[in-house]
Length: 288
Length: 268
Image (tube, rainbow over the protein chains, first blue to last red):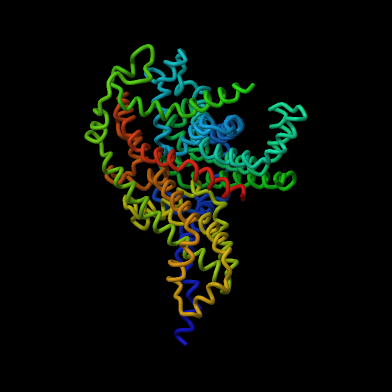
């Protein structure tokens, strides 16, 4: 009897650690975040009373949150197309044979080997307006950290360096799988490189394109480390993003309720974006 | 037209790799090399002074040790937990199997960054701030790993394991001598992925550590005090030292890395 019970409970024992961890670090915090966003919460994290949607009302009336929301959307709109165009361009250009093409490919995915904070520290020093190499090389005195437009551009540049390695690998793997004979037929029929890309390669790498698009949008909406390390939200909140403000509210001001409300907004935003894209994918997916 | 593509590709690739090359070069710069005009791309002399200083004047060695320890232990635990769960979901039939699987995998939709406030309060309540367990706690579970391992394990039929068990083979032996060696490629890829994710994590270790002695290297790197004083040499040295082993590994393994992405994401 005891042996039988042991055998029956064995699968549950084996998956117990995984279950415990999802409950402890995913479901419980999600529910706590949801509950806290509807309560007044003290500095020590104690709930003081139900306030309904008051936190959200406060959030939507505050200038700071408006800045975060518009900056996050602006960053997403600038970053995603820039990153995809640069990465796709890199993948198409280096989709050749030979040692030089091989070297190009290694260079394109090498940023992936550099840790996020290392890469951001390198950029922070290179873009320093007074002694950084970038202003010296281009011969301009751009105030990368004090001019709102330049600071946003810097975040987009940083985003590309952080993402290009992995996205490049995905795009170039997909491009390598485009059948050679199709390209040859197109070439014989007089198609130029751009036409081959637009009408042959792009449709065939559709699923990879959608995957990169989805992960880029998710990453962009959750951007925080580049803001923390490079700009600290400045100048004048011009680069303050949602997750960065959540961090400020939660850990610098001790405002857990407001921080939780921002977290819920972030969930809803990423979730809607992902759902919309999944529908798009279902409607116009191209199978190889 | 024949030359245009390689030329453009080379120019763009040099631009992309420039921060990495510059970092290595600048790690040998003297203080005056940074302010020289026209701007310098290569150091005047090759001396390791900056490297010595980056260790001597900061806790870099301690940061590195913390990171290596948490990444190695974290990866081992994460792989063990994932393999056990994936194994159970692939080879056992039990009540609630599909529901429990969905419960675990559905957490892929909850971005961990949005959960950090609540997770931080949990870790603080458990008094795990400034501990190694606190640092690795939230990365111990990877639903994506469980999902991918199960896809892979299911290629072996369930009868295979049942026959082995009937012959008196234990689950441990089946896993260690048959299943894991057969899935070596995917297990290794996921382990490397785990290691680099935990090693490179930034926001979470920043929150759960306060003492300098508990900082991981990615967090410590941003607080060494060199770059704030525009003393860039030692900062570039620390970064170069940190990325060198991974860069070398990536260059040496570039073929298998390209292939693994190709098979993992495009199904070929």
